[in-house]
Image 1 (cartoon, rainbow, N blue to C red):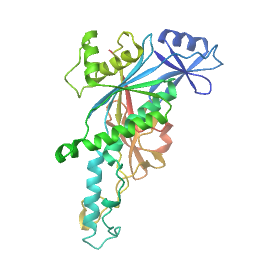
Image 2: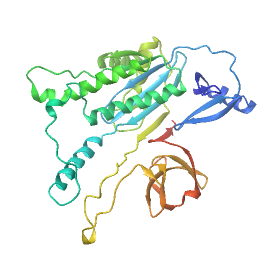
Image 3: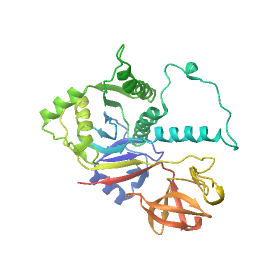
Image 4: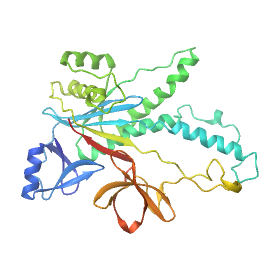
Length: 338
């Protein structure tokens, strides 16, 4: 199905692809892209604003995650994403560079006292927070184009155990992130439902839906089969599976650093890292030579552009006057049809 927005970009109930095509041919709607997802925007006031229940099923994972939005009639869309797993590595690199600067004659931030005892008990590690915030970003994106009413999440059971330090160190951060995520869903005005893994498994077996063991694949059988089942558990009826998915890859940005880690000739260290390329945020979608690309790095007053689907660099020395910025984005979106 196709998400529908009114003239003020407020979400309405989605319609079928056939109806959306007819509305565009008659001039009653125009094509509209929301961060890579195709929608239609009405050119006049809709005949009614009746809403039905729109459920979002979320299947969390360590490397890939599945999202399915559905109504009682059919599936609206499927999204499979990767997870931002580079935050921990970046923080460790930052700590190493900061400590090394204290051993030589270079500007550095003065060392602070140990603040571990001053940290709040509910503090969430940065790497964990980035993972759960990525889920919230996807949900907020879908809220802009769909009138979501409920979110059904497959609950990850990883509770801490008394006296087992090794177990707790592995799963306590996961439990913290999960609690933070559930609280944020409530603040978004959505009803939260938590489903256990064995319930999802039992319903999937009853529906005779096959699940792939290749968890790193961007396919419907890898994760969206479970998110589809989560929608059916809430709606209370079987829905015909729709196996085309949107593939979403989060972009890894390198924040501005004092200099690169390794010096070049004569001990010179050049500046490194930023999220802005000549005034344009990196990852932004632009039009270059009639095709859509996203902005990469910059050097010598020019920028590089990359392929949206593969991330491969297309051109290295592109002038600003040769591109047309469209919208800011921090991920790559690709529709994979079956």
